[in-house]
Image (tube, rainbow, N blue to C red; front, side, top):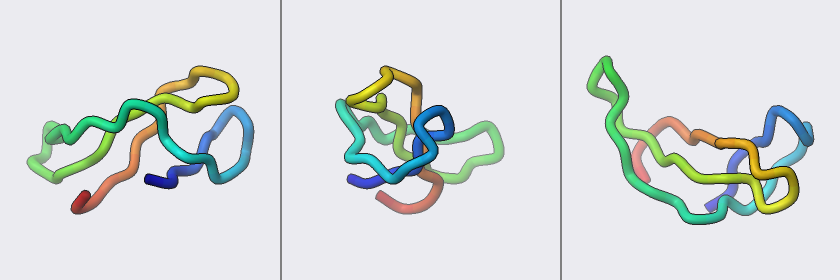
Length: 46
């Protein structure tokens, strides 16, 4: 799954994507950037 890395400032393929639910109840996908290791989020249905 693609997500935007705020540290690299580029679209990257997410490593180890996991489905999570945010505090407000919205679904999201959480993973890490394969280049810098920063946590990435993609909000919305996975």
